[in-house]
Length: 409
Image 1 (tube, rainbow, N blue to C red):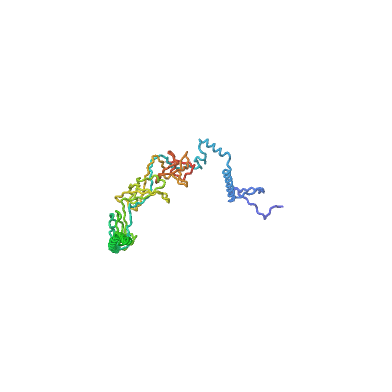
Image 2: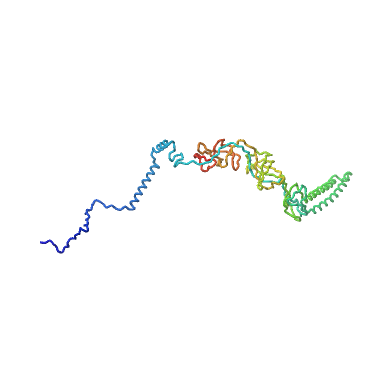
């Protein structure tokens, strides 16, 4: 029996002389206990990041809030081995420490100080008055040359006084009649023809008429207004023919040589001011300096400003000062040979007074002080400092008590 099957195709053969036969891959059975590895994605990386953050946070909390008990000893040992250098983060100003504050200082020394009081004042005329009329009437003449000097007693203007003059003449006639009557009755009294009472009535009428005549003469004098003292006339406010009444201002009269300078000094200098003390006056308009002298001191201190009013006088022969002007006044009260003065910027005002910052062993310290005479650059220290003390003059806003400071040149 033949096994050949004519319907089955013969297997394909290769010509190994030209093309090598392919090698079949070995057949490996799958391992049921081994899972095929999955590809790594974003979720895997995110988990690693979260884990790393948590570990770092726990480590930081451990170091910050639960330090090792031997950490300070180790740091001290390292500092000793390093030749005394401060440990990192210590007070020596190393990495992480508070740096020294750079400041400039001033060494207190004794200096000469001229005790001066600086104040402001006003210039006043030696004499000044407003020229007015004492009676009502019309101005009949006006002899006022504005801005010109006049002498005492010089006629300035006149008021119409015709009615007063008429009354004056009438009273003169009455007096003549009373005089004749008094003479006749005195003769009759001597011969005892009349009583003493009748004579006294006649005599009284004569005396009354004479008093009325004197009053009319005084009224007539008021119609002629004259200069009360030597001075310079101001600007007039009326003209000839104007009707004026008592209190109407006609012009002003001022004596400006000499002039007065009124100013005030603090009450603490009240016992140091003396009559005759020199006063340096600076005119604000011309900046010219002149020397006046104190000639009057008020007996009372102003209770509102707590200052003592003082008045100085200056000849003003060349009209250097004009009344009403504003001036600066420097009053010299003596000289101190060993005064302690420091820069103004070094003094710090506080609620209880004044303080300064001193430097002691490289650190800043607060020192209360009492001040005296001051100017725009220096202040006198009367209590709290001594010669040789070192005070801070710059960088005060950055300095606190106990801070280490670095002195700058």
